[in-house]
Length: 58
View 1: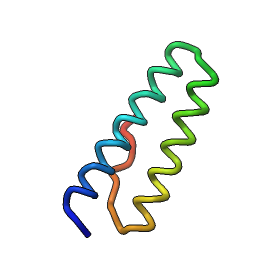
View 2: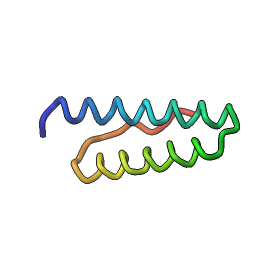
View 3: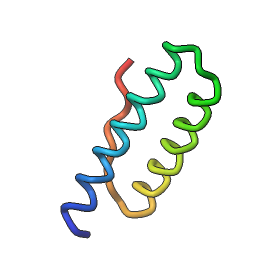
């Protein structure tokens, strides 16, 4: 695995999590759904490629 791939994927997961939180705070249901779908895709991709992702902090 290329180190840049794992780092980029982790960065994108954090960005998707932040965007989802912001959408929730703004009560933007469409954006919440879109960012949640993106996050699910990124987490699936990470699992398929053996990239460890830290759980989201609450």
